Length: 200
Image (cartoon, rainbow, N blue to C red; front, side):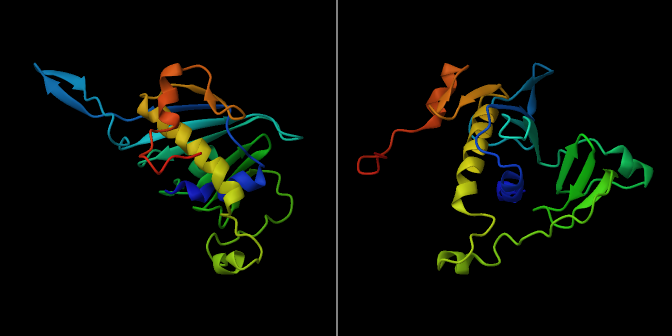
């Protein structure tokens, strides 16, 4: 599932950079002297993982957590689906609020209220790539425009660093572009560029 599916989530909840990121990566084991031992992996993403992104309160919106499940991992099936003998789909999104739950498809399409008070219709989903050519020519921005791509990419790059560190919790100071609790993670925020390709 591509993280671009979160464009609508970032837009609707007015999310910018997270203040905390932590992950739970899967791992692979091998046998050594007839004992199962974990294989160190610092060259590829894990086969499956979960990532928690914590966002600070903003305006009237309280702080919130966003959970990402990857590689077949899923949250537990909500009671409302269990009661109708349903299952969570292979991919999609679920919004869990104080007053109920909403289940939707990949980019928020076909939302359906699972629980809570039903208060009118939900807004229709916009296609992510339907009008991108018009947007380039000065039309209305698509829901995947760069103003959202920046914060989403920042969040998921931090998620990748947490995975790289085996699931370590990172505290992020976006204004200063610093991981404040793990100095050893700082080296993953940038790279040494080849001559002529440096970023000024």
